[in-house]
Image (cartoon, rainbow, N blue to C red):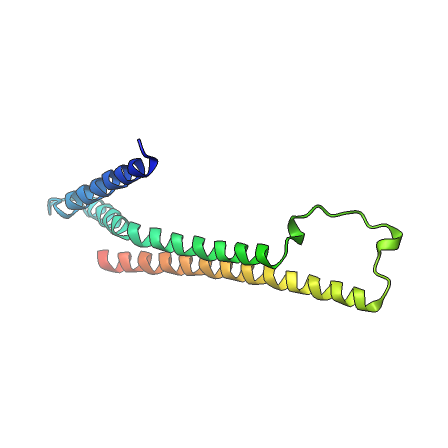
Length: 141
């Protein structure tokens, strides 16, 4: 069988199970204890957010791939084996040393940009979770 068809079948089955569970949660009896109702509401909201979470993950992955592609396109030096420098290979002029410092600064800036991006994604995720946690508490109160 074709692997793509298998993946599509699996995704379809999962989607059907999620929809079935959502219908179950929406049709719960009204005389349930408050704790059970709260857990059911949390589960219902989590199931409704699955598609949104998948899209966010895909966007983050795409952005990370762009960064990696940009890094590899700008130079293969990080992936090459470093050779040992002999005395004759060391930079002998100030100009060569300045070029090396500039190159190191550019690499440091790229690393910092990637780090900042990942930190911003993590902070956004925390804020997202906190917002929905607070909203769920307000709804149940």
